[in-house]
Image 1 (cartoon, rainbow, N blue to C red):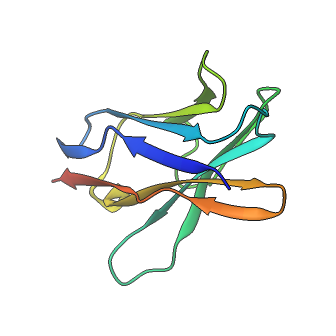
Image 2: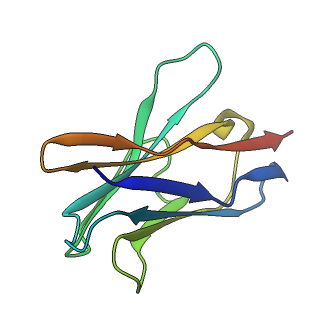
Amino acid sequence: QVRLVESGGGLVQAGGSLRLSCAAFGTNFVIAAMHWYRQAPGKQRELVATVTSGGSTNYADSVKGRFTVSRGPAKNTVYLQMNSLKPEDTAVYYCNAVFFGVDNWGRGTQVTVSS
């Protein structure tokens, strides 16, 4: 099992930007795909973005063109650059990776966008 640690959340005004980071600890293997999810109050957790070790990406329609997911230079790190933030982006953002069949989650980082 790996441990995922997120950072970078905070409070920002609508139209602003934030960059989230996630690092995976506990393995020397490269994790094939890493994901960002988010959960807003009273809503189900939703997949926001995915990036593979080869750099392929996928995004939820609601964030396309505004968010960019990327792998960092350090092994098993992932970033989420969030631009043009909207109040509806307010949520707890979680890093996720399935590794050897085990679903691993970080503790989450709060992103709040004020109007």
